[in-house]
Image 1 (cartoon, helix red, strand yellow):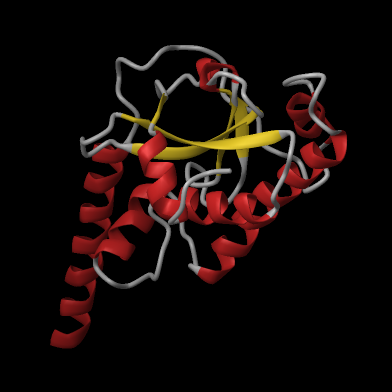
Image 2 (image 1 turned 120 degrees about the vertical axis):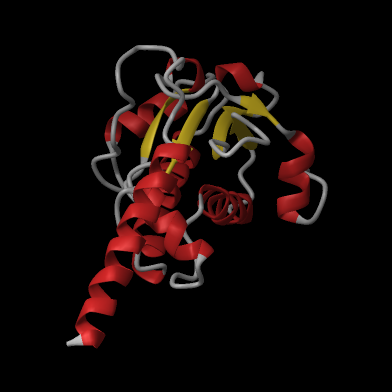
Length: 195
């Protein structure tokens, strides 16, 4: 009986800690209010593909399709591999205590950046984005732009927020985060200078 009581106490402590982590990692109350970002409906989501292709007339539609597929499939694959749970704060707690291999926002972003870079696309490029940097609420995502296009015109790709379900949208329309580019971090994560 004592073992069961300890187990319940341990579970309660885990739940309380996870809720605290989720609260700390939740978006700031001062974040802008606007419409939520859309979920990608599939690896072949036509709206996501068309929005990426519409970044510039120079973007090849087949490259937009590759990005949408890669981002969507990366989220699904990592969700299984990392045994992701929701909410993200609980997954963060499990990773930080060693109970899960991965699932922190920077891990999602790093994996996606590496996979997108491996596609060697010619008309699109990828950026490391961060919000609330150097705070407990820091969040990282990948932003796609047409080659040579300013970061501020990009579309964010985020698999962390909903545990492997890809959300996307213009970086200036995110109701929860204000994104800034960190070129040095992208280079560091890739281990080389971009083309």
